[in-house]
Length: 191
Ligand SMILES: C[S@@+](CC[C@H](N)C(=O)[O-])C[C@H]1O[C@@H](n2cnc3c(N)ncnc32)[C@H](O)[C@@H]1O
Image 1 (cartoon, protein in one colour):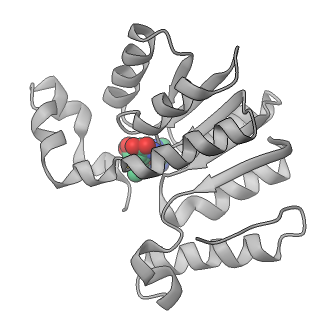
Image 2 (spheres, helix red, strand yellow):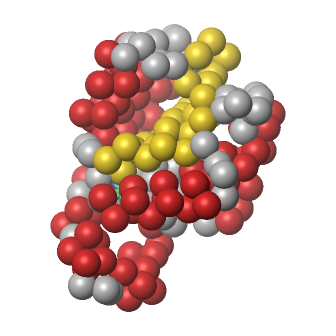
Image 3 (tube, helix red, strand yellow):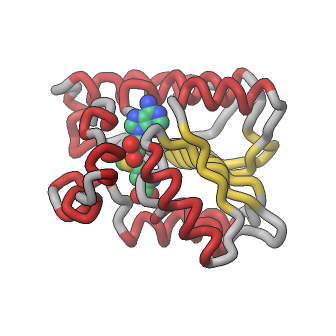
């Protein structure tokens, strides 16, 4: 996946075509139900309170995690498409879930959260594949992960292409995975 803003979801939404967008093949970007169940399991397991999601789309992951986070918790989302930010923030308000999706480029928002000294117990990375390493470095170098916190990253296998390094995103994901494996600050597993 490259920068999905190329699809211009916000413009399509203004033209009343949002539903059409979500019924075409781009819908594949939504985390699948088993994945959200796994996220919920991990959030419950570590009793996560402060949660960050990099790449929120229509909020399946963000809202799912908010449902099971520890009392008084909050999910902060990062999403480049204004229409998705608005959609998810509205759904969260309707369901009384503490979710705040911030609009903008992931790297810029991560840097501003780091400057504010924000820390998270659980972080779900599901955004631009060739930026995973940069997201990870911003998070770890600025100590944004709480002690005993957990980072889950989608697509690290990338249908095998990160193992064979057979496309640009596959190679970027493999570089990311290699960096994490060698990073003494964390214990990691690639599933
Ligand atoms: C795979 S989807 C996220 C799916 C979501 N985590 C879920 O649970 O359904 C990736 C999202 O990242 C957003 N995105 C793409 N480039 C971005 C960037 N540079 N900064 C922030 N968000 C970006 C896309 O608009 C898209 O909504």
